[in-house]
Length: 348
Image 1 (tube, rainbow, N blue to C red):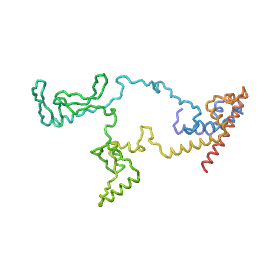
Image 2 (cartoon, rainbow, N blue to C red):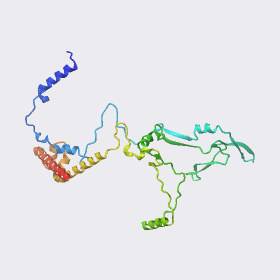
Image 3 (cartoon, rainbow, N blue to C red):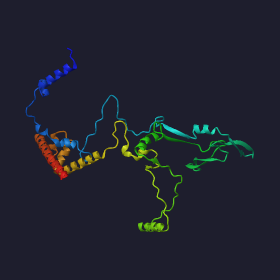
């Protein structure tokens, strides 16, 4: 029998209008009893509230670990903290100075000739410079690590061979795949905040001995400086701008940074305030509970049956089940009253 989607939807709606409310009636099954034994435990809101309590409240309550999703392949890696094997480290980008572009640019200039004298006092003609590139004449040195006479590694200098390129270096700057420069990310903040970026100072202040004076002495020195200055210099006002450091402006606007896909970024202050208020109100409610009822409620979070709650208080057999049910209902009622008091205290 074939029918369209509209016909199938109409048939389903007409069946649902007269269908029984319970699945047991649909499948022809009958309930074992019309009066369930644990019917009085169906409205225990305290257990649900304790399970979903705010973080940081009732830390003494044992909690079960979050289950790991099971699939046909393992998604929980083994955290053995073993160092990676060779070839499995982070691929780094290496910066070599001078770069190939600088070398090609210097090759346009005429080489500058020089001389050096060997052990036999014989002069040799060599190239000592090509543009901005400088070469060793036998006297240049570079900083490096050397082995001391006692076998330890210390910082020292090494003599460069004749003709070696000086002022060259090689360093690992960043992981491959990272942002090499921050111009792209800075464009958004330059558009958002109109201002220029300050230039780094050319001269660094010298370290001097700090002068320790009191506020009164500082005021006297300032008043004396004003008195000895007949004409004060003009006060210059500059436009708003960014500091010279850091170069990546995202570090100045932490709340505006967005995480990876699926992450919402920085949490709103309204959410933080609400979570704090809920945690404090829940804690006030637990403090208002009677100690005996509080222990029953916390033990119920890890108990496997009502019998276990009753046996923990000296009851045996059937009496343990009845006692566990009675204690749990009393703890739930006390929890509800305590939360009402906490809400009333918050409102007042």
